[in-house]
Length: 501
Image (cartoon, rainbow, N blue to C red; front, side, top):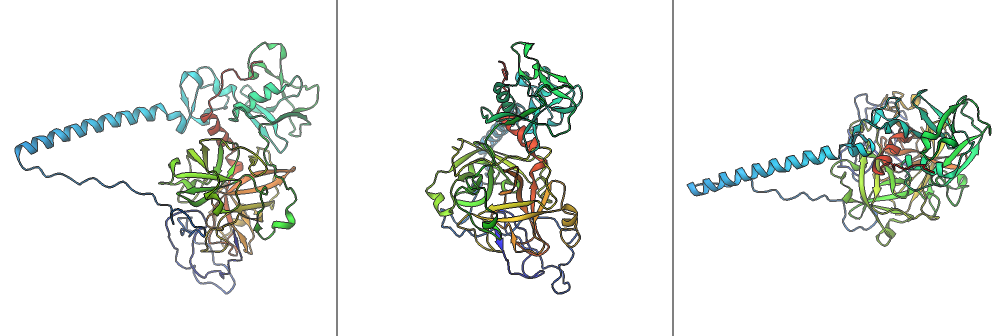
């Protein structure tokens, strides 16, 4: 969290403010008028940044990924006997390599659905995610079209996709029960998580509803649903699968403006992600098992989940040596992440063991489709990143208030010169002074709406820290909600008996 970096525009090293990467400096900015920012170079792309030095004593001073020792480059064969042995060993090595390659190909084909697609239930057929809920049945049993559910708007209105009408429709409250809510939550990847169902007035402008046919017998939720232009209760289902976006203190506006140390329970979804005892990036809890972070944090060689440990509910880095760390089981980077432009900079981590929620550890809410944010929406950032440019990792968790900056402003030639894509969000202040910095990468950009905290961004990149006309850039989580649920569904296969009550 950078406050008052102190460097005038155009002075000092020119670099990006995202997480652990090899050190690379950029040449000084082109000269300009005093107190004026030059045009952002058009050919410039966000790229690797200086490695920061942890302030906290750690097991190893930097995350070291040790390469395996190389084998000898070759063996000299002189006598006929040695030549025969060499040929034999060579043939054996080729045969072993062929077997290994075949096994790897089989493994790849066997697990292709978990990497790039969705498996059609028990049939094993793998289809592209783009075919899920597109109104055309691609699975042999039609699973891709009868498991289409989402939550809409700040009121969590349950909507089901209609293949017949090729559109989303709210579910009428008539005859609703919690067993159906549990089924819908499982279909979104929440496993056994369920918080509440309640009736609310629909404000989506829907003129057609999905209603439950209670006489349909003992079949699943989706087969009970039918189209209706009438909803007797005049209310629709609001579904909460998890108690998210809640903290023990709701009034903090007067305390964190400008950036200050956080207190326990302020940002209970914030996690610190470590590699070999070193804080590398931040992340946000969305379920007991799932964490959202940035894709650039898990670029090779850090894509291996064995390197990562997550710490939750702890404010001080030094206390994390004595606190309980959670090992990471799986790392999923967005398939369209571009390491050059930092487009689609989002990733997921699945923990080996689930978190236990309490006042210090809670999930943040994923933004639902239909969330209307103001162009300059007030947001908050948090993390253990450097408190000034080229600084050290902070010992304490810091937080600060920032504001969204409209894309057309951020893409001005004197700011980021059309480098901001729809998958990115700008937030901060054009005058500088408050910003994210090295070590904050992957951490949350949240906003408070309808008394709920929503995760709308993950810390991605920016030119320097807290410089004028160089605000922070964040991954646009509102664009990735469907992708996140899809990964949760893939890892948690659909149950065949959903909603059979």
